[in-house]
Amino acid sequence: MLPPPRPDLARSFERSHPGATLLPIVGDASARRFFRLSPPGGMSRVVMDYGAPFEGETDDIRLARVFEAASLRVARILEPRPEPGCLVMEDLGDTMLEAVLLTGDPATGRSLHEKAVELTRAIAVGGTAALEGSERAGGPALDADRFRFEMDYFLEHYAGGFLRVTPVPASLREILHALADRAASGPRVLCHRDFHSRNLMVVGADLAMVDIQDARWGPDTYDLASLLRDAYVDVDEAFVGSVIGRLDDDARARFEIVAAQRMLKALGTFGYQVGALGRRRYAPAIVRTLARLRRVLPRSGVLEPVHRELTGAGLLATPSGLEG
Image 1 (cartoon, one colour):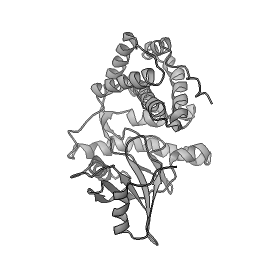
Image 2 (tube, one colour; image 1 turned 90 degrees about the vertical axis):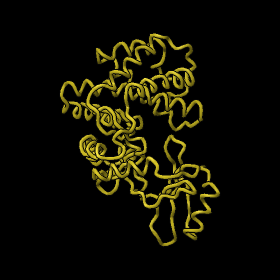
Image 3 (tube, rainbow, N blue to C red; image 1 turned 120 degrees about the horizontal axis):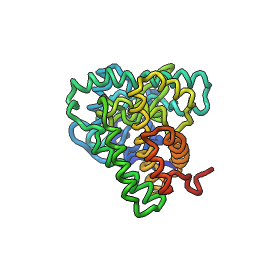
Image 4 (cartoon, helix red, strand yellow; image 1 turned 135 degrees about the vertical axis):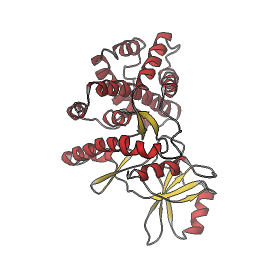
């Protein structure tokens, strides 16, 4: 059972919305928490709780302006509440793209998946123009330093913390840093950064994005890699092939490298969530991501050395206890 809201947060909404319910919603892997505010006879809202008061504008507020300037659908911020430390936001409902892909009508899922692919292009084109003209133009980027940090995080929290593989071979760290450098090269655009089926809400026949607070500059294939190598659903390889087939040779090569880096980064996150925090709901994502890496890494001459080092260190085998 999810814990109730903080007392000061609950009191704030008791004063402003007498009789309203404030019920927890399952959130993401961050420290933020989410609640649905349902006033008697009124429209529901989502409350994003930062856990502490804040001053000025948060990244959620700044980046919402960028996405909205590009006519990209995100949850509208209706009311910042700095004192209790939360944002009151538009309620986009509970239907994630994940649910449609897992249990919905296959034709509907395919149509929405195509719309998600189109959305990555819209972010890369219109979103980039909006970011260039915003106060975030000089903001953070998914660059080589960031990607190297993520590879070190994978080695620390998945290889070391989750699998207890220590010490990490120096040759493995070296080859993962080289992968990070290659992933960071190429054209730079606005990236949502966590563009996957749990962050895409189905609203009518369209999609809306949530969890945009980490959006930043990054490689032009990053969001597409996040979508097609989504750790939460089994994406049809024929669909992946049809989408990648629309790219030119250079973009396809960039996609494969970026996708490999992102999958390893994700394993670091999942390993920490399961191993350190006991959040077993991320265990299937580990199994799915490992299976993908075993399948896609040997296909590429560029990625074959990464496959060889990871296999030699025992990092691509499915850990015991996660197979089911």
